[in-house]
Image 1 (spheres, one colour):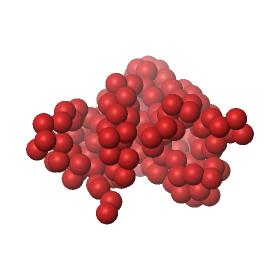
Image 2: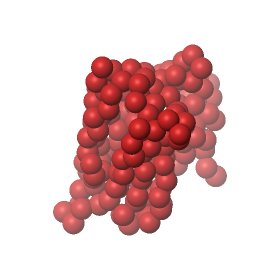
Image 3: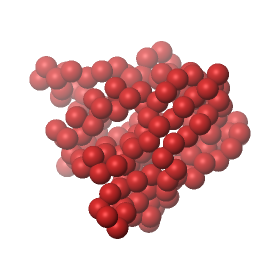
Length: 161
């Protein structure tokens, strides 16, 4: 049985687990806004960035590119291609949120996401997120399937004024 993020949040709340606002569905603050921004409209996208997910021959796992530079208020179409042989995901958030989410995924590896700031792809699959980066700052992205982050599957997003 697959666990949804909302059900997992309810379970953690009942069992006394901490669940920080802003990291999963239902905790994104006012009107779905996260510190990193909010879902955008495809027609507002100023550019498209293709992000490849894959394993390396040395056992590492990567995103290419591993960093993004964005202007505050910019809407991007992020296109994803999983060129690996394993499932991979992309989750973007504040750095602390990513680390909290990583710890949660290690406890509940079957957890699935239904968050607008994330996508999970099977090998060979493609997908996209359209996102408006509403606040300047330093953010991150990662694959939080257990072991993938520690194998190098992470990156940085810099949102400039």
